Length: 74
Image (cartoon, rainbow, N blue to C red):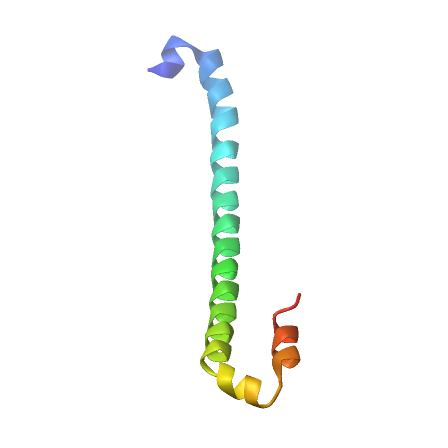
């Protein structure tokens, strides 16, 4: 129906919309991969922090505060 009404507009739409949709799909996958990597990094950092906080008495008893601090420096 749209091709019958305006063939020029239909052709313009058919040349613009499919590449935009493909680009959006690939960009969405890229963002999903980045999000997953960020969540995994946050999870591992939280795990290490939780372990360290639970054993804070042992760390202080053996004067290893500097060693534990160096684990969190980037």
